[in-house]
Image: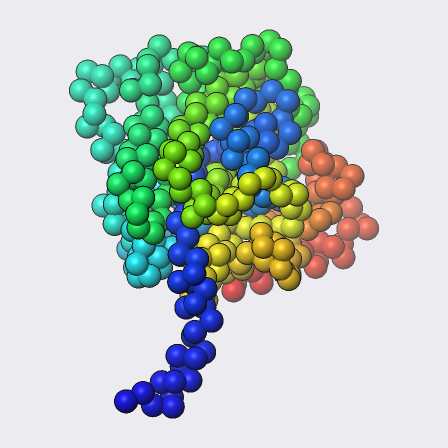
Amino acid sequence: MQTRRHFLSASAAAPWIARAQARRFNILFLMSDQHQREASGCYGHAEVKTPGLDRLASRATRFDYTYCNSPVCVPARGSMITGLYPHKHGARILKDPLPETSRTVAHFFAERGYRTAAVGKMHFVEESRRHGFAHRINEGDFAKTLTAAERERLRKDQGGGGGVDGRPSALDARFFQDDFFARESVEFLRANRDQPFVLWSSYFVPHTPLVPMRRYWDLYQPEKLRLPHRPPDALTTAFEGHLIRAKERGWYQQSDADCRRSIAGYYGNISQMDSCVDRVYAALEELKLLDRTIVVYTSDHGEMAGAHRMWTKHNMFEQSVAVPLLVSLPGQGKSAPARKEFIEHVDLFPTLAELCGFEAPRGLDGRSFAGLLENRKYAPREFAYSEYDFCHNVFTADDRYVGKPPILMVRTDRWKLNELSWGRSELYDLANDPNESSNVIDAPGNAGIVKELTAIARRMAAS
């Protein structure tokens, strides 16, 4: 017999249970690696060709101020799937595997009857850990599709993973893991069209090396591409480590012509990734699943792409820490107005839960922005937060900063503080210096804002 206590418990839970039963939406999460926020046609870029993302954006909400919670792969991805900041989920640098005990968005939806899959580059470090994804296709699965001789051809064709020399590849699509991941993602959709699913479809490019297939390289003429903001005195007022790193890696000395070829390679990589994303999205259309599927596109972090005479990430400049974000709701037939509110990657987990009618787990650092998508009441963030712990072998050659406290970013509408508790911090007045050219941390008139933002940064890192 049902007791009064049971009845009250069931009554309290009934609203979200009813919503979940009514919605039961699928989730298709499309993710790239190292895609700068501005570098898409749907974000207004005049040169990058992204017809696939543009098509998705025509039925989506575009978010213009989305930030990763660490500008490096492993911690950023950990924050996306756990809803926690890196100092809480534990994968703080590139070599840190996400703890096996971590509770993820995949666990959450699997427990509610969803089929869960992760196809592609998840960068868990220890890839035997599935983190709740029942179906897993990774880079090792792709490697098995090539012979040893073909893998050597691929290695020679692409060069080192950190290389920024732009040039076309001599290989066809089957040598590229993202082509394989797109195909496997489509197969998953076909096999699971009749049950609720969460598919994380994740791609390697536009991450370096900047060596796209010939047909994507040929979309761009290097000599005609615009250069980013890269003055001859770049980084001279910033944290000294960035200047050291840029010079050690040869980026600082890169000529304009070489920079343009690198940019052509980067844009070619973006267009190559875009074609993979579009294949999966087209399959969703073909299978008539758009009316039942939430579609998300984002990247784990950005790419400097020559700005400030730097490449890759590992810093808090906008090109590195800001990311694209497109969200399409089931049945959304046209784009919604672009949103200017601050969004963080940790917000994705609770948002997806709420959109599907569920209550998100307690204790997450993220806050749902479902209200923005559904034109309901929403309390926006007053700032965006990110943190960066110095990674071995990729910051400076001598690892001089490894083990020091992290860089803590607090970004408001006007100001960005990159706080270093042990060194010279950075403060940028984004209203008057959108290129983040001049560090005004020492300006006497800024002492008050420095104190305020420093207190916020330290509170966030200690939370």
